Length: 469
Length: 150
Image (cartoon, rainbow over all chains, first blue to last red; front, side, top):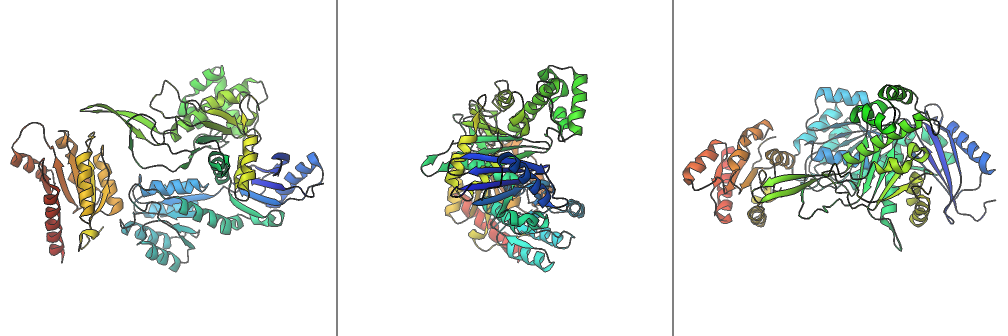
């Protein structure tokens, strides 16, 4: 049935589900989708077979695919530990690089690693460690000390070294002598105040493809797809970047923000310079990456439902949902106890779930966005900006199950907008609100790697204005 | 962090900035450019720089000296404890200079200088000091240090 059609199969090995989207690249149509359980713990092929079976039930026999690409957040995702020197400087740069590579950060260390730190890292057993520290020509001692301590530890995972370039050969040598797999890349902060996270990000992704996919057993299904290209959050970030940048001849959406409200975390991706829009504002602190991803580990709709309530106050969420606090507490317990729980449409629980989502989304965007403060000078007040100014961003995209399936996505997404009551927060003021209601953003990111033009067209067609989805 | 044996200006990293809630950037920028032109490695933090950010930048870049500017009269408050912060951060023998409009009103310079030296600054420079003088002093101070170490 499919001869001559340019079809792609995009697979997401998730932590709970294995999901498929089949796309006709010539027409931008989704010709089918499928879902199966996540079976990485036993045999990844079981979940994929189940998802393909689901797909065949909908559209009949599997067509022939030109491209079969996958991303994965299964088996704990890409667990990473970052190590830098000063917390706000190279340690922060290392964190940004790891997050941009789609990692799940289990630890972020700064200054010299202590024996306790090493014990903690050994216990966390990350998939990759990113070791930074020192600008080029700057501090060399601490990265060398830390390399020595990691070399002497029981840590066996690959280590990406992205620190002071003069210290790098010695750091590499001491680690390799101890049998640790080492990848060397450019310094995440070559000069003071200059971020260069892309080389480290690419090195992490390469280690992920070359080693982690195998270590997690995902390559058992390798005859069913061409490649696992990246961790799922990296695919979402790449999708966001393509939608923002566009391709030669087809403009993208320009500056945008993507919010992904998940069961365990809420991710925010911004593709924007974040330069001040307030006249005369002075920028303070490290520049932030143009493509920035942040992960709020305490804001998740199921696993971390309780901590959303802790952060915002259960009474506030209950009031927004129009329920009393006692009932809200009960529903919170139900939701956090069952990660696959879906409230019945139109129910009180669905209303509460939506209020919870709006709260998580609002908090996550506030934390991701920069802020303004007024400093009193001898010459009068001056505005000082920390972080990215997202107030002029043109598009806000929501993704994740609770937005795609929730009752009132427009209201949920609106929680990410600037609030006149918090004028210091630089959240988007009047963006177009779009919804990734068919869960294709990861697919756009995967397709961007092989056919950016088709990926862009496909992505633009399937981001729906809220209310019209 | 061991002390480097310094040979040339190119081996010396200097952190510059205007301390506190002070936006007067022009003089500091002229100083930073002149230092760079003279061959020093300069890490310019610019205006509105809290004390701890000078120190964090000095750690990351393994700086040899910090040049603090203050123009708005509150330097004494902003610079209090600066040397102690450096020692706390492990920057035991970093060279500290301060310069600008260091006090409010007309005061005897010798007094002002003594107060800043008491705070742990190696040198204090009065308003109107020419950059050439600062550079000459830097050369002398680093030469003395290198001699002392060898």
